[in-house]
Image (cartoon, rainbow, N blue to C red):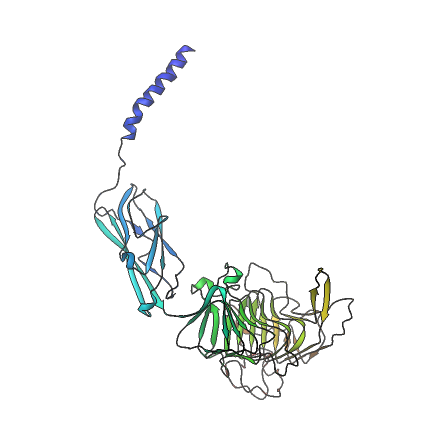
Length: 488
């Protein structure tokens, strides 16, 4: 037993004796000429970057392809503090770092972002990242295209325009931030070709998402008389490709009960929570709350259009792909759709959609001060002529009315010469096509034009009064029009 204890004691002393010699041993670096780093790419390119607004970070890997450790003497941004770019080097925000050890076969990340000086105008910005190893120098190039924009509003706040005439310029992009409230006889005019980038993003807080609000005695006038050949556009401010089809990035357009004479023609709205919200009718409502023509609203989260006891006149329009509804009205109202496409195959293949393309309801539940439900109803009138209600569910039309409640609401609706995707819904239909294949051009590219002479939509419409002489792209219609927003 004593011998065993003695042996362990000797072994411990030996290890203790050898430890200083081990600690003094130098790391063996690869120092030969030509032992260079390897990079994932030679140029890190950014999509177009708005001036005065930072880009999302992009990253790349730096590899040591050798078996021994390399010591990188210096990594630096060539342009230094005056550069339009910034770096994060292996977790450090810095213009330069020194003496980085990279083990054999290992790698490190470098993240770069761009912020463009607006005073330099639209131009390509160039810089490079320099790597010095074993006396040799290597580069990775940086490039970004700066795009000057006009900023309206303030992120997270309301910007109010009172009795102002705001005319946008199609030659310059706009970035809307926060809530832009047009009030007291203001008019927002948006010409053909104007691009409005709505600040936000799919993970932003609700208050950070840009929203246009049209208030008391005020109007929005978008590309009046225009079509989809040269549309005005409202879309996400994120320019990366991955964000172009995502909904839930901005608040869309909200027409309050006090707004008047709103006209949206030749317009594209995408990436919103709700594309357009149309609130209550003003007393006596002598004119329609919104005239929507030759426009497309798509890839939204909740609804392309949500209307509450309001009125809408829509012609040659496409409402497509929502996580919930294409069109939903609550508390009745007055709605007309002529040569319109309401089509929904969802915006996310991994999230199921349970709601119908079209939902019409004559009621709203309100609450008193004690939290008790107060049902309210209103009359509903709706006309769908030469239009399409179609999607990937068996039943794409739903009517909602309160059970066991006699509120006296009157329903007056009709589908005339329409293509409908329905299961049990069978009322108010006149000369309609049921559950037939429309032969759209390309659902994945949101192209809902007729793509085959076999389509049952061709010549299946009825002449309208007043007539629609052309389609959403201003292509002429013949005497026997096709169903939908596009003429074959």
